[in-house]
Length: 499
Ligand SMILES: Cc1cc2nc3c(=O)[nH]c(=O)nc-3n(C[C@H](O)[C@H](O)[C@H](O)COP(=O)(O)OP(=O)(O)OC[C@H]3O[C@@H](n4cnc5c(N)ncnc54)[C@H](O)[C@@H]3O)c2cc1C
Image 1 (cartoon, rainbow, N blue to C red):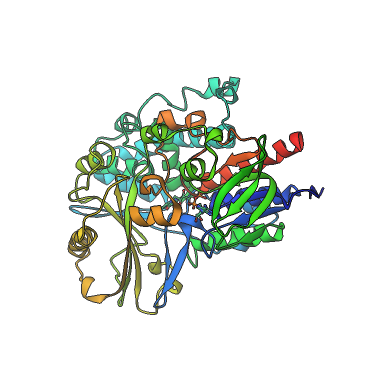
Image 2: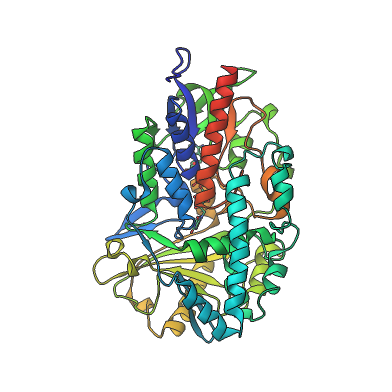
């Protein structure tokens, strides 16, 4: 069925070519809608953009390919196949955690991993199995019953199924207490708590529900698309275009227009206007509501946003090194300092940390195509409180500290071999994505910011929908894809009912 309207340029306009925007557009096009995506940058991907420098290919944001089932379902739904679109390899080890006394590999094979756990705490291998069996139940309930709901109202969740599953979801217990009921060794606790740390809040503030992430990373595996994470974006754009989506880059939306009753389109910074029956905003929620939308249609004010708990921002470095660094694995977590004081600076005092934990990805250890031959491509990340001001020289001081610790751990100098280095933090997140307080991953996954307690997908302005990591279901690449699909369905149904 083709819904093209004689009175509008498009059925739907999508603001932003991040994962959520592309997914929303593809969903609408697959339903027969005429859709255009407007993106302010010159290429798609949003926080997962890419840049090329001196023979290196640097992924700018996400590096962990988790929840392969979500990508599989996505490409199948829109007439393709994930294995045709992406050359996926499962990483083994999934990742390596560097403690003060040396590295621990998190093996892809569960039996090997259980043996590692046993060597660190007697009986912890069997406990890990128990922990993961429980996490699997949560993952399956979450994915099958909750994650694809638009979360307009609490009533969507007030079903018999939710009631039946409620105790298994451990919504009221904290992640921290849950992990401590299985393990006592501090290193094991850090390993178990890691997936929630980087994307959310303190484990004490995160519901135990999120142990489903441990199932995702340990059992479903940590994967990598050859060519880099941006290959996912390229594949999604290919599939979107095959479904009929149009992309217009270098197009900064300045205003969402309305006819007094419903949304009517957008005006670009260039002054050009485009009309549409509906608009889906995949750009950051705060930016869209506070800047692009007339005040009468705003659901939230600045005070509301000030009270949100944001996920961390990050200090990033993209680094090219003119030799191989054989002791590094693809994903390396440097947990050689205690997390407590670092977490306190992110979530409580909102200050710069001393001796922070950090993460280093070396994708060229898996994929020789992302660095010149014999060179290594490194990505450094320190999670930081959002909204921090930066002093001159601060970035470089952190870089030096990370290098000191990394070189000590791997027993090799890298600094004399650096041929390229670029830093990226709050300021750039704000400039590039209009990110509220320079956040990297949207809102923290606290209980009060889950499902219908998140900023609403449906705007007060009829026909306008929000999608992406600041609305349901939340931050991360797979949730952003799902968010786009759900918002696309919602906009389609709204058009069916109203225009
Ligand atoms: C450093 C970092 C590491 C991460 N690591 C991982 C990971 O390993 N695994 C994982 O699953 N997730 C990870 N994430 C999270 C994941 O990348 C995000 O949740 C996801 O990319 C968000 O997608 P989105 O579509 O919601 O938003 P975005 O990617 O931010 O897309 C929004 C788009 O809107 C555009 N835009 C903004 N304003 C306008 C305007 N006015 N007009 C037109 N266009 C506009 C922006 O340019 C952008 O392209 C990471 C994020 C960061 C920053």
